[in-house]
Length: 116
Length: 116
DNA sequence: ATATCATTTCGTCAACTATCGAAATGTAAT
DNA sequence: ATTACATTTCGATAGTTGACGAAATGATAT
Image (cartoon, rainbow over all chains, first blue to last red):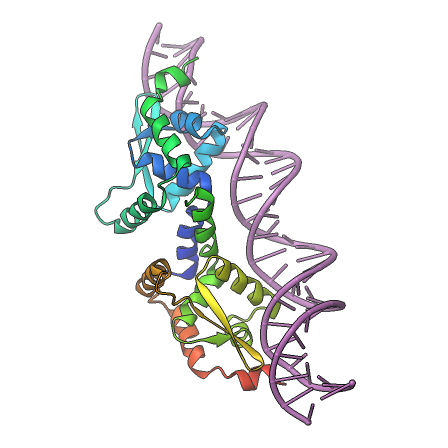
């Protein structure tokens, strides 16, 4: 059974611009926390918190990759909801802000930014 | 152009359980503020604020009806977005909480509750 | 075993949100 | 004109959120 509280939690996860930016760049490829931190220009701990909110609303998943933690869009077949939100975003986000992030995703390199 | 802030505002409007309840009951029929207040059991001023948030995110519209102000789901042809959210809600909200509200909508009467 | 280092958790602070009651507003009925 | 009254706006308050840096965690590589 889905309560109003459950639904509001899902929308709350989407109600922060930084979290929308994260979802948008994860459309392009898997990213680790330090790469997302570099793109958004926020403190690592802040990004980590945003990721945990997106994850507990079931929009993204995580997986270990060597010393990094990769995050990626939830691709479970069951989750048509995530797919719907992501494609809505694709439709909406034809703007400069988003394009700049998408460019950064192409050049960002975890080996350069994480290791000093 | 739609920014991340624009989109987050829309989701923020949907991120409160009381506002979702309001949208759900407005699916059934137009309601005035005092009727919504009676159903949600909140202060009138609180309901009025929720309505203004839903309105500025363009989910609902208002119209004067005698001494009352009716609120109703945005039915402008252009707003496919609202229609999509509302039908998503129809799908999700097959629960007791929602059914109780929907029952109340049938019996609530502005003449009885507003005039003392 | 130890050191390294990416990530998470914790504590703190400022900003924002939901709530209420009281006062203001504006319209409808007398 | 005046009264009644539905709704909105205002001011105060408690709770929540987003941000950071510091400390804790835990896995990898030496």
